[in-house]
Length: 348
Ligand code: CP3
Image (cartoon, helix red, strand yellow):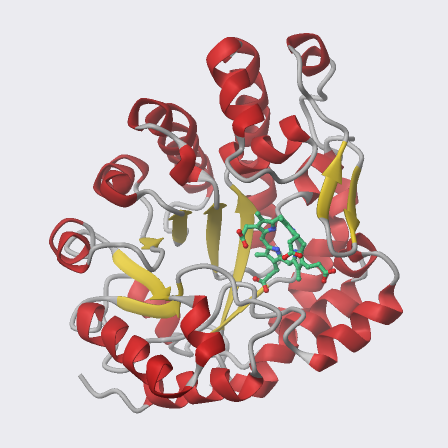
């Protein structure tokens, strides 16, 4: 079968066609819970060296596909490659997470480059081309970026914080300066996502991991509006681009996010209330999620019950089975196998 003719169940759902067996993948599916990842990670040097080596990044992207035959591969990279390409210093401390030079005052924000150096991201495009060549035609390849709000939280604070107070405070005190960061991220994210589509991505996901710390008014300005501009900017060049939004923790703001942004699907976390999602979200777009990653660590009967809950709640409509957030490093591989088997046995 030619690449064009092959049906990708993951893309079918995004195009509005429910599948009897929901397609399945996991956020952070390439990562430390896999021994083959840890082995390559140890050889690669720094985390960014791993991201920017096309051979290694392609290999790590394919590792979970070989093991679990997921319906989608997500390119191995990170949301912080955009600040890196904007010339900010970005490094990943082992066991501590990302560290950046903080961008904490309007004067510092004035010095921010407006245009990323996309030659720095060429290895990501090359990894996408390699993965697309090796991937079976029925498996989708996902490109991604961080949402401007979430990327900005790390740029402002210079690291992750429990509730992203530094970025929230800057946005209250200096909204115009903060808007500048968001505008720069919107424009460069559009270019980056278009580059990923050109290199072979079949769909795109926008990760807004920290959307849930925003009150409604701020959520509209800093999460919905930028996502809407990114979707419009990508579709201006590629009108049928398939895009998933993940405004984690959005709760009751999800219907507004869906209506305003025009995404094809939203990824929902495990706290989302099922009837609200069915009646006000899944009636409009596909839903992706939402197994609690801790149920996947727990395994056994608790995992079976949690998988069945997701299926009962959402599989009658358009569903892409996933976790409510990324898989955690301590997750046993046997539990992932148990989950995959149970989802694939579903006939609805
Ligand atoms: O999903 C995938 O398998 C693709 C790769 C991917 C990574 N990060 C690899 C990674 C994706 C899609 C991301 C997105 C990302 N990165 C987000 C949004 C999604 C989410 O999980 O909330 C965020 C907030 C980041 C920023 C980031 N990168 C943090 C906070 C950390 C440290 C925490 C951690 O999990 O270690 C990273 C590092 C990172 N990104 C790792 C991986 C596999 C671990 C680093 C290592 O292996 O040494």
